[in-house]
Amino acid sequence: MTNADGMQARARRAGLIILTVEVCYVASLVTSTSGPDVLHRPAVALQVLASAATIAVAWAFYELLKPVNQGLASMAFLFRVAEATLFGVYAVFSLFLLGTVSSRPDAPFLAPATQAQSDLAQVGQIYFSGGSAIFFYLLHTSGIIP
Image (cartoon, rainbow, N blue to C red; front, side, top):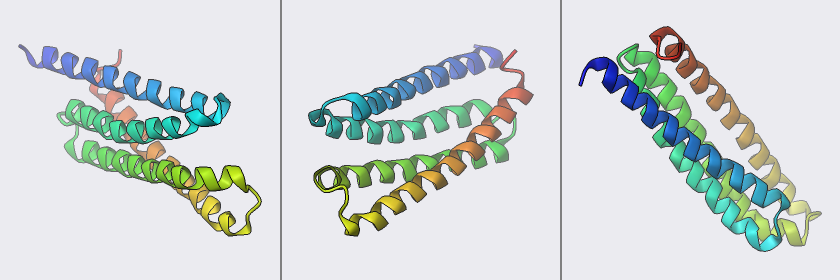
C-alpha cells in the first residue's frame, strides 16, 4: 500500500465517522425539538454520544493530517476535544435540567443554570470554529481535497 493509498483510506474513514456523528446530532436535535416529551431523554443521550464521537472524528482528522503539519494538526485536535467536552457537559446539564425546566420554566433558581448552559455552548462554538478552521486549512494545503 502506497502512501497515497493509505491517505485515501484514512480520508474515507474520517468521512464515514463524520457522517455518522452528523446523523446522531441531527437525530437528537429533531427528536428533542419536535418529538414528544418521552423522547427528550434519548435525544440528550444521542447528543452525549455524538459529543464523544466528535473526539473520534478529531482523531481521524489528526491521523489524516499529521503528515502535513503535526503541530497544527495537534492544535486542531485539542480544540475539537475541548469542543466535544463542552458540548458533552452542555448535554448533561440539559439532562439534569430537563424535568425541572419542563415542569417549572419560570423558576427563578434555574435562570443562572440555564444562562451558564448557554454560555458553555457559546464557548464550545468558539473551539469548534477554531479546530475546524485549522483542519480545513490543513486539508486545503495537503491537496487531499481537489
